[in-house]
Length: 400
Image 1 (tube, rainbow, N blue to C red):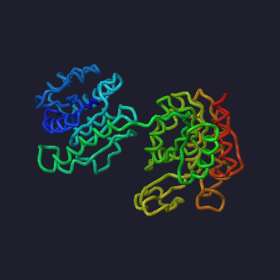
Image 2: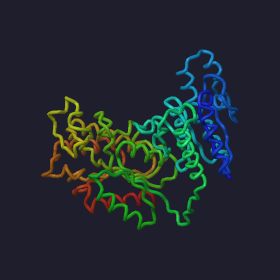
Image 3: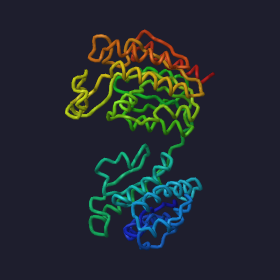
Image 4: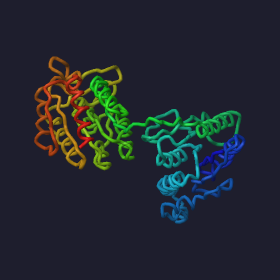
């Protein structure tokens, strides 16, 4: 028997949450109602009131409610709900969480769910589940189910969806996680299409040395997810050879992972090998989405939905400074490896993005600003020589 938190704005959607709770109970599990509403009284009796939630973050919710500013109340609860829910999980009071909501309810509930560990069962039934959900999910494994109709009353469609949702969260908490008796220390690695071969070769070396390698696609979300995992303290080493997301951050392109990319290794004090993989490119959408200021630059149509912009010498110099600065901050052993014959498949000599001036500006800036070890390799990033060198260097840093 598990205990499942039924979380939501019980002042406006209490009966819908109660319907879900009754199905959960029929499956033999317990329910804890948590109220996040800030309007009228809760339609059903919660196990934890909105005031309990607010107080967990040191907030006096009544003061916000008295001002009758709904936006202010929602912001306050979105700060408190993650604190409250995380504490319930930490204290092993609940084994899973489910919520139903529209715009406000989804924002509130997912803000709380994002505070929970990866692997903890979390399900959001939402009117927004079929749109862009990135800002609701963040880097966490929140399952989102479209509500189809609004979460506003019980009808033949909503009952069907809510029943399936209740069954889903029950299935999640009932699922047994197979114990990994041969667990290995973790190494995380960043990869892009243009650095795939490098990571494939390096991963084999690291796995043969007794490590499990988790590979993250450097697409913005992938970089943020990798950083979050490093921050948990579960990671033994970082093979961050595909730092391309910094090019998108600098140029305002689509695959930025934000200005904190490369900070997690410093916070967690994890040994790292860093390389400027794919810093020759910034990613945009369809050609017509490319900013006007870049229309006369060197571009590459990767596919009809992806347009790549070649970074120039000035931009590469700045990226080199950033890479060096981020690496310098790590108190754990850190090395920067430079594949001087090509940082991606398409920037090698004879390819579309070949630009020796830009590459030299990147390498020179790294060498000039780095206080950590910098090693040059007169090969391209996907060569066996470079890939194995990166893997062996990381093993050396871990064992120091």
